[in-house]
Length: 234
Image (cartoon, rainbow, N blue to C red; front, side):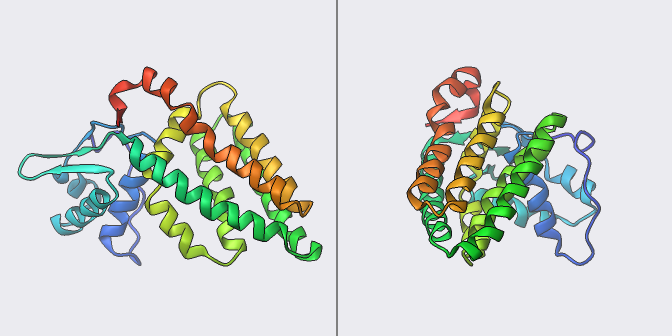
C-alpha cells in the first residue's frame, strides 16, 4: 500500500488511535480503493498517521476478526479475497433484520409512519443527486445511510453496528456491482419501492421490495467473478 496514494483524514484528538486507523482502512477496503490482494505495510501506516505500532497492530487485528485482511506473522498483511460464504451469511442477517424492521414501520399508525417515510424519501433524493453528479463513492455511502434509517427508526441502532461488522464481504460485492450500467438507477428504484410500501402501511409490499433489493448483488455474483476472478474466494 502506497501511503501517498490515498490521503489520510485529519487526526481526531478526541478519539483513540486504533479506531481511526481501523475506520480508515475498513472504508477503503470496502470501497475497493484497497482491493483484494493489496499488501498493507504497518510501517507506512505508522508514517501516515504518526502513531506508534500498537494502534496500527490493533486496527489490523480488528480487520482480521472481520476477515477483511489476512495477517501472515513476520511476513505481510494482505487484503483478503471476497468470501462468498461470509457474503451469504451477511445477506441472510441483513435481510432478516431489515424485513422485520420494515414490517414494523409499515404497521405504525399513519401519523407515525409519515415522518419515517419523509426521512427515507429525503435519503433517496440525496442518492439521486449524487448519482446525477456521477459520485459513486458518495452514492455508496448514502446507500448505507438509507438502510441504517430502518434500524434507527425501530430503535435498534446497535443491530446496525452488528450488521455492519459482518457486512464487509457483501458490501464489496455491492461496490463491484455498482458501476455496472443501470445498477445505481435500480438501487434508487428499489429504495423508492420500499419507502412507498412503508408510507402506504403495506408491510407485505415493503418486505417483498426489500427482499428483492437485498438479493440482487449476490444473484449477479457469477458475472462479477467472471470480470474479477482474483477478487473472490468460495
